[in-house]
Each structure stands twice: as C-alpha cells, then as structure tokens.
View 1 (cartoon, one colour):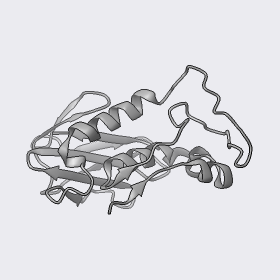
View 2 (cartoon, helix red, strand yellow):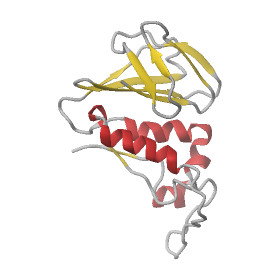
View 3 (cartoon, helix red, strand yellow):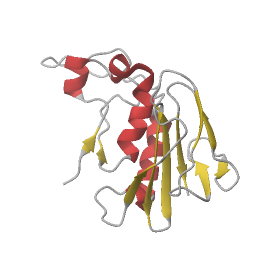
Length: 174
C-alpha cells in the first residue's frame, strides 16, 4: 500500500478550512511536497483555481465557481507531468529511494532527493516564516539539475547555495 498526500479535499475544505486558511504561506510548498514525496498525490476539484477562501457546503449542492481563470493549472500540470515522466517519483517502486538532505538551515527548510536509476528529482521547501539563504552540502546530491518551473540549471559541483522566499520551493530534475 502507499500513502496518499493532499493539502485539501471536500471534508477538509468544509470542516477545517481551505489550505490557504490552514497553511497560509506554506500552502504551495505543501502542495509540492504532496506530489514529490513517496506516495500518491490527491488533487481536489478547484485547487487549480484556487479556492483560497471558499469553503464548500458539505450537505448541500455547492458548485465550484469555475471562472475560466485557473491560476494554478500550470503549477499542477508541471508537477504531475514530472511525476508521470520521471521514474524517481514513482510511488511504491522498490528501486526508488528518498534521501533527506543536510542543509545549512535544517530548522527552516526541507530538502530531499528521490532517485531511481539515472533519474533524480531534488525538492527544496521553505517551511519557515522568513526568507532563507542556505547551502545543500550532502553526498546524495551531485551533478547538474534543471529547475522544472523556471528553467535555470544548477551545477552542484560549482554552486550549492540556494535562496527561497517565504513560501518558496524549488523542484529540480536531473
């Protein structure tokens, strides 16, 4: 069996609030975590809008306000395409491994690399309430990675430094 990871669903939205009400600036890094960590991501209807403040009625018909503006559609499409195409993110694959990385700011960021053969995905998440400059100096990450959202390439043999704003994240593919 595999764990399912999510930041929202109908019950959570109704009873406990939207992911933005619950997590604030951490909503986006947690969404990245839910797709890149080992398991199955669950994406709920309306998360691509997003439903920042709308709590859906539980026992009443309460349609999602589809407005044609899907602010997070590209965000989720990028993550889910990466999960589909990169074997390092296959949940439950015995050949895949996950390594939590040592950083110079372990109390503020979470960094991990998932590997499967030649495929690797590096994820870095700012879980603090401040901007963070830090380095990743861990034997489990080396070589050149490309940021899947913004395109820049980082060669870890030359540069191990990172900067993430509050609510920041980086997902990089080897």
